Length: 404
Ligand SMILES: Cc1cc2nc3c(=O)[nH]c(=O)nc-3n(C[C@H](O)[C@H](O)[C@H](O)COP(=O)(O)OP(=O)(O)OC[C@H]3O[C@@H](n4cnc5c(N)ncnc54)[C@H](O)[C@@H]3O)c2cc1C
Image (tube, rainbow, N blue to C red):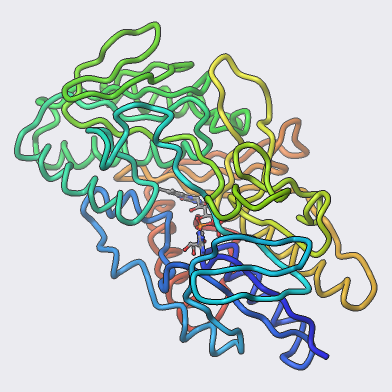
């Protein structure tokens, strides 16, 4: 009888798990169901470009059902409400799904409530963490271009996804210079990182010096170890710094697990993330795996203002491959191989890109990190986005060594 594998989430973690499992186990050996509340895959790394007006959501997303059907993976467009690990059943708004193996790849919930005034919806602050928020931020950026004024961009205490804050601040600076409006928009960057380019991974080679130089030559003021405490109309309150005037405030929030995972008994930690071992198996519950942002990862070190471990798309895919291999191996009576996470990514600076490669992510590292800047890296990031979307929408998996 075929083993029942249920995958929760239809983004980088869920799709990669489904693809890798199907490559190893034909339909006679594994019946794979992928459940996602959003019927579309969205290429999340392009959300800063949506916010800055150079992409539409349509251009960076596609319907999941076609490519999953091509891989003989059943797609259930449903919202997960809870997981009963004792009965091995997932409950959704429409059905119950029994599983032998469960892979949780439900990503994050933005804990916007950590910073009063960080909307949208409940305050003037913005963030790019979801497609809707990115569109909403795009409208606010258009507003800034007609009514320029001072802005504050950055990340809140406990944030883990800090790269996009840099992409947004460099992208906005570039856009304003193209429009000859930069002289009317003082920009301040605030970050919980103890130094620029810490990025939750303890820094990477010369990224600190590179980012300090890049912000300084662009007249972007910055505060490190900064704790944003409140966003209100016209200003951002930063502990120890005071109120900074701001007509457009963009702050990346700390993250938590989604409610269905956080609320399922015995599944997740206090933040709603799932504790895993080196094969991404749940630390206690048999048959359950967590990959991507849903998996709990401790910070690399204690910092004066908390900064959490970054779980990038590239890392998410590595976790998914390890989990899928392990499931396939266990079905044949073995354990799958494990591997340290490495990270490769391209940080867009508006007119050029910075390529960073660290191996492993947590210092001390076997290799001196690669950090290099140039226009070609931005072109590679754009090319990667297109190639990824084309491959994934046709049911293929792109080797993801470069480009993120
Ligand atoms: C603005 C931004 C820019 C980024 N840029 C980069 C970058 O340049 N490079 C890089 O490597 N990484 C980048 N990242 C990080 C990368 O996007 C994440 O690592 C990646 O999206 C994590 O994938 P995931 O599958 O774990 O979760 P997600 O992408 O968050 O997907 C979660 C999935 O779960 C589904 N889901 C959630 N709750 C439920 C539920 N209750 N029921 C059913 N389905 C549910 C969602 O619909 C979705 O399909 C960026 C992130 C952001 C926010």
